Length: 183
Picture 1 (cartoon, rainbow, N blue to C red):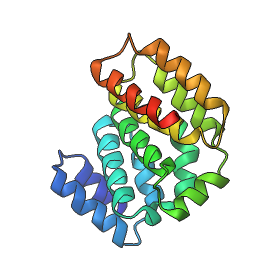
Picture 2: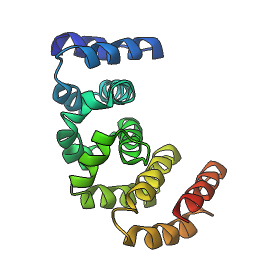
Picture 3: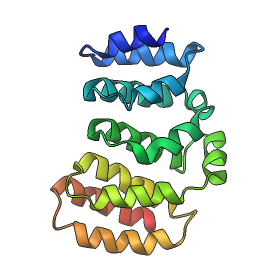
């Protein structure tokens, strides 16, 4: 699939089945995931969102396919300011840092300097303008990375205590889940 062709597709509304088809194509072909990652920063918010949605599906379908460009993805993570795209970015990183992530992904994360990712996850977590779905992924990211950075656990517990009354019932339920994970 050519970059221009994909861009034309992304300029129109997509249904889940089309996103799945595009992710399958991106997973199977020699299509550059760097180009797809770049499209998640497109000036048109909907294009960026749709590209991020496809990127998430690529990771879920074939984590090793994204692994080749994982450094590029993670190095640009902090630059994502499109809230719709952030939701997918957060989910991808939550999956990458999960205890049950594929071995190769875990090894990559273990060797990657994750301090900036931790900082951005905390900043998104406390930002009043960030939707709860993104904050939920940030909770997962931080809890998952607390095994690599011991100091996160206490900081995360304090931050959750601070935020729990300010956020929704869904956030409260997620906090309960994260507290169990941190024990």
